Length: 478
Ligand SMILES: [Zn+2]
Image 1: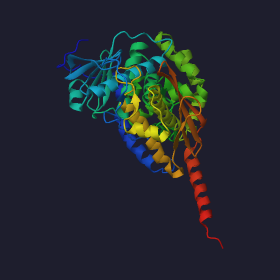
Image 2: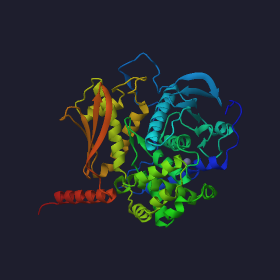
Image 3: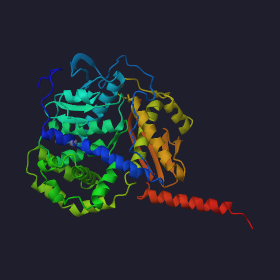
Image 4: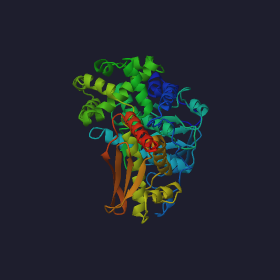
């Protein structure tokens, strides 16, 4: 479809509306969840706040230059504009955006890593995508609507065209990146699997992948964000989750008629939690059912057997939902922070930079003094990523401070340095990197101790014990 920069797209359709409707109801829920979250001061990991991740991030030190300003993922601007937005390209995407060159490069790199993620999710049965995928980022709602966007949605995926999203910020913050990962999945799966992918799995995977955290050398997908937990808990407590045989066969029309309502949001939360359960519940042993279901969709086969295999897990799924605690999934925020920092430590180490301690490493990271790969290198990481990793660390530190601060140490006992994060409440994990030909090839986070399932209670007990011990010490002797 040839688009003119001055001609808006045809009006949005109900199907398009549905794909983005999550964002109409989410903000109101988030407000409620923030309030609920802030009431809990013990171990209250208030990660619902946005991440300020953008151009103001610590700048990298170009320790190497390969002579090319743009690498495979770097932005390449041409004269062609669309809706008044400048055109930039990477291997799989054409981005139309008026962001700064730095932010466009950041977003294109993130889009490419999202593409890798989508491809891994559909490995073994996805079709190759031969045409570059279009993403338009508008600065304001007026331009978005004038181009054919929905007046109340922050973003839509239009089959046959691409993504249209609004970013009110000059930088790339977490809610915006969630939106792009969510809608980007629709864009990918409709091209690589099937346009008619059933709505529960389309939206469930979009939410699941949307919550994922990119760490530089991988993704952490098992996080359960507080807002998702509180939403799901509300539906569980009020007995609003449907039996799976009904849920999996629920029509798109049923989703659409409840779009923008709390009930409609419940559909999203059930879809997200079901995908999460299938991927990770019972140690991931049901994940192949999800793959088998999608493989059948891809090849246009009947879904009866695949649906029955999933609905047979109805009781297990509902029990899993009931057993969730707010801190379930928190450990993966620690994992994401340690993995992100380790990706940076590995790159600096490969460039000869050594640190006496974790404090020295963090100081250099915060001051923008890490020796990191220059833009254009395939090892380059967006500056916003380091800022995001540090933000997670600071947020967790602040939240955990009542029970003693998180402690980050540099373990130099085994060849390459490792970052170890510990906390008195059973948290102990180490980030390791592996190098090959001077490049970080692998980052792995190993848990020595995992947080208690009910972290809030664990923290409260720890604080009570500590106070009791302090009280005994202060007691005057008779
Ligand atoms: Zn969607």
